[in-house]
Length: 413
Image (cartoon, rainbow, N blue to C red):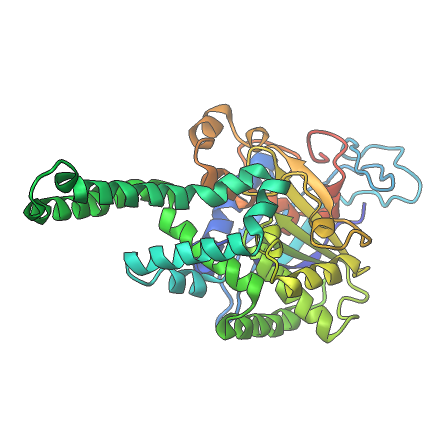
């Protein structure tokens, strides 16, 4: 296996209120967990001054790797320094070092903008997005292809609708019991107190208003009807184009959750401008817990679906779609390219992972009921050696494509 010495990574994080600095700090914490588990050396550099998107260098190094015998589309194992390596396979070096330039293409500005209004305006905007998604066939598509994702869509709106109904019931209780309408002078404030001081704090356990904003962004990236969103995507495409000019052995475009929609638009814009932009490059597009179909299933998302097709048909791009059974916020075992309307295009290679194989039993038991926390595990550090490791994919010595074909439950030694 030819090891990677220089890599460029463009990472599109999910819908979280974290800027590039915060995402870099998370990356460093996760990388240190990975290095401790796998036993390699790690150095995470400081952010480059004035970089946009924020970028930094990660250096990993270690003792000799095994020289696995590489069958087409498979990865095997061999003991370090083992003799009898397959003909045509380069022997492993005595030591290895990989330098990766990480660019954090976050969309924190939109997360904060969508959460900036007062509570009432956020609730109204959320229900408006819900109605738009229903009218455009999004909910029907969710339940058709991934019923758990359909429930994820409905949950915050049903919870808030129930709370509004209870609030109204408290307000009209005196009237319904035959008391004088003057009694609403105390029942109305009581109802308001219930909503503000009881329901809203309770709903934050489920990140309800944050999810309302997430669906508002889903509509924006599907419809492409907001000029500020569209202009920002064009600007990100310019920045990514500059990052791709750097020489490297491998280019990894990774994306998590809602970030996969941003990545699909940005890569699609680059391919629309220049169909040969990736010519001569080794490119892996890794969508982690992808939410592309969250937007692409809207009837108005024709531009997004077209860009998905451009990515799938680009011969230089290997698309790896990482999915998880216990993550309800992804489209498990759903072929994203075909469902986006490109059944004749090369499909994304699915990598099915299990979070509980990455964490200790105690750690997994602690987080398994928090679906947003489980959904974040794609980009977080492991407790155990497993078949997927985000840090190794983006900063490790092996090509990112090896994750697509694990023969074993573990990565090569």
